[in-house]
Every structure is written in structure tokens, then in C-alpha cells.
Image (cartoon, rainbow, N blue to C red; front, side, top):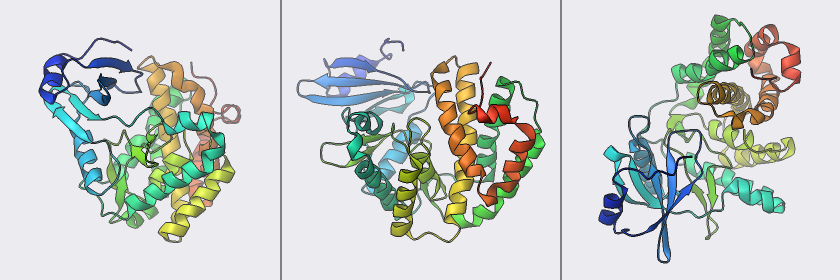
Amino acid sequence: MSERLPEGLDEFLDDAGWGGAVIEPLPGDASFRRYFRIRNGGQSAMLMDAPPPNEDPAPFLHVGKWLAEQGLRAPGIYAERPEQGLVLIEDFGQDRMRDWLDTHPDEERAVYAKAVDALVELHRCPPGPFDPYDMAVYLREAELFVEWYCPAVGLAVDGAGFRAAWEAVLQPMLPRQRPGVTVLRDYHAENIMLLADGAQGLIDFQDALVGHRAYDLVSLLQDARRDVSPRLEREMLDRYIAAAAPDAQFEADYARLGAQRNAKIVGIFARLWKRDGKPRYLPMIPRVWDALERDLAHPELAPVAEWFAANVPQHLRDAGGGEIA
């Protein structure tokens, strides 16, 4: 990560009342965004550097303000200059759920229970003023698998059949996601902060859409970056069902969205390597692939499962996705 400071940062911090603060770069993620911890005496804040044209902080500001209006724990916004890509926000500390659980494994069940309960609370809110998670978006995401993963492992596949299979699987679900709930889309252990007051803070929600209530649950319980045992997944799924009382097709839709999301993630991780030169995501593919295989076993996924059987050789599947060239 480059530690070069954003252009215009000194003026921005001066105007925000944080002039002369100590600036600490933080590790980046899979995007062009960078983060810095800003310390001024006994106070601290987080700086988001989301430089145009590759990034735009406006969606983060839009979603974050809406979440705060609903009483959910998005970071407070101290200062903003969207045209420069600079946003100064509340510092949620350093207890990221994934890292904290590495050192407190006995607390796993309780922490996941709180994360599930936060989704129940979010889903009781009216859907936010965001675009719909519609068929076009689902297909565009799923097709990342054939666009990036398949070429990376040397597979020539039936792209039209892939799209048709997903349409057949997802179409029955669409009426059940109306009027819908706010879907954060990256709700997992790396994007949940454990706060000093016992609450869980939300980050990385700028891509929110209005869609199906199962999506963020899948994101949490079939986490690409952290092992979640099938037993814990089942327990937390049951916890959500007991609290939210979804319709009878909820578990089938959970499998649909699990398979769609996991196919997308395999494609994204292949793209991060082949296009962006970021190989650190490749070791996560077997974990994602394992969840994908479990989702494909659901009877409602038959058209997509048949496509995988015809297009992805068993030796690649047995190897958790195989080697990417």
C-alpha cells in the first residue's frame, strides 16, 4: 500500500478541526479506497480516501446516513468533501469481528448471535432509498464466474447455458423479495466492528441495494474469509428464522443466493489476481467453493447444478476450484 497522503488532506483536516493530527495509514482492501487513522491528543477518527474517478464516497455517505437514521451503528460522519474523495468518520476502534474471534474463539456463538440479531433489526426497517437487487444485477454478478474464473483455469464453457440456468433458478425468488429489505451486500466478519459499548458497528456498506432478506445472512454465514462451521451456520439460520418468521421458501432462497454469491466471489477473486495483481485472495477460493457445492445440492438449484456437472470437471471441483494459472 502506498503511504502517500491524499492531496489536499492538510486543508481538509484544518477545516474539520483536526489540524496537526497524527496520520497512520491502515492496510487496504480489494478496492482503490485507502484508510488512515487520525489521532489528535486523546481523540481519534478514521479518514476514508476514496479518490475519483475510481471511487466515489457519495454512496457511502448516502447509505451511512440512512442507517444512522434507522438507529443502526454506522460510523458518525465528522466532515466530508466528496468531490475530493475525503470523508472523516467515527473511529470504531480495532476490534474487527474476524480478528477478535481469532483470540476469543469461545465467544463465537455469542458474537454471531448479535450479528444475526442486527440483521433482524435492519430487516424490520422499511427498505432504504436504494436501487433494486434485480435479475440484471444477479446475472451480472454470477457471470463473473464464467468471465474470470473459467478462463483462469483453462475452461471453455457454455456461457449462454450458464445464464439460462441462473434465470430459471432465480426467477421464482424475485416476487418474494418485494417490497424487500436493505441489503448491505458485504455483511461478514471483516466488516463488523465490535464496539466498546457491546454494540456491533457496520462498515463497507456503500453498495447497498434493496433485495432479499436472505442475502446478508448468506454473506455472514458462508463467509469467504473465515470458516463458519455447518453446525454454527445451521444454528444461526434457525435463530434468524425464529426471530424474523420468513416465508416457507426462505431456506430454498438462502441456497439460491448462497450459490449466486459464491459463484460471484470465485469470479471476483480470480479477477483480483488476473487483472489487479492481488493473489492474496486465491487461498480463500476453496472455502468459497465448498459453500458453493453445499448450496448446489439443494433441489431448487438443479438447473445450475446440472450446468456445473456438465462444464466444470470433477477434478477441479474436488480440488476446491483448482489452480488458477
